[in-house]
Image (tube, rainbow, N blue to C red; front, side, top):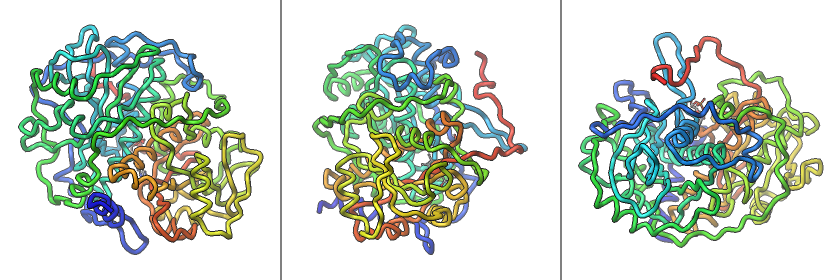
Length: 532
Ligand SMILES: Cc1cc2nc3c(=O)[nH]c(=O)nc-3n(C[C@H](O)[C@H](O)[C@H](O)COP(=O)(O)O)c2cc1C
């Protein structure tokens, strides 16, 4: 095993929560050093983006019908709508004197470690080059003016690990990766609402992405918290757009460009350095790789949602439920539709931008789905995954196929049971895992994935975030609500299935149900602070 593989496995192990031992954290919230949720590039030229998302007529159901949405021309309006619906603010919440912003992309603890950059050439009214998206003002900050080798649009994501570490300590590196996955899926859905495609440029190394986005320009950060590079995507605004230049053509172009801006400092001090996160980030750095050539099998058409909501409205209404009513049920068909949204399809968002084979599968705790016995179920998201799961889990489970489920769903009942107590206990005793209609843990083919390289550790969490975002939107479309759950007891989940080794590891939990709304909270519009 390589040093990097050993290091990332060690990080995974030490960042596990257990009922009698939580991963190392700060122990208390040091409000004096609470990180600013908004990165700003001081001194950079700004371009205010139009708030145009509410003018889109695309329906949510049309996102899943190939060819249903005519591609919007690339301009400031459409670029604004893309960013508004992916990383823009969706509301402000107020309780007494406290006020905080929510965004279209969710984030563990609402800390928002993910930053977004666009690299554009040929967009009217926008200088060619690299721009940072600042969600507070819904504007672009120009970091670099450059002559680029390609007309079009790239979008890159990075993470400020410190934002999550401030609250969650060592486990925060995982949460940053989850958030990247959510952000990538949020981008994919927003692009689909404009009739655009997203291609993940999986051959780029972290160092390439850092060079393109200016994240390796240490003097521009000075005392400010650094950002770690994560993913880079091409946004194809026209059908058939292809042919990208190699990373060096881009990085040479921006190195010759004119950079501006100084990163704002997010916290006035850092009480803890969290070296375990730095070590994990170093071990899981991505090198250049050959482009992945995964051919996802075509699946029978997505069973279309009855949801008649507009795509933009549904994306902007997405929220995390904080409590469920504990009594409502959903029909089996609605349950199947929600599960169906998590399947990797070559022609539907979000997985049509995912160049790698599916590695995650869903262990479901079904509580209240009409027509389905409560109990423990398994959704295998691939044929290979089904074999891996059958090999690894204990033999006395039922593996009863749910024949009523639509054919693309490889859904099995493992045990008929009231799984509410187990679900709650395993998710760090959180009621939301028991009071919804179902909750789940995502089981990753851990050893097989890590055999590809230590950096693939991050990719597994990204995949879990994509699944999470698919669940969030599908839940809203079904008239219920979801919540991501990053706090769970890793090895207790494994013990439930009799897992003896690290072939399968639980990486993320999620819950869905009928939400109870907190009437003490006031909801305010996202951009009331901005003139239209
Ligand atoms: C990776 C991840 C982990 C999360 N873990 C939890 C959790 O354990 N418990 C919880 O109540 N909410 C959890 N959440 C929900 C966040 O608190 C929520 O996304 C954030 O407050 C922003 O609110 P919004 O989703 O309504 O925009 C998680 C969200 C994400 C993306």
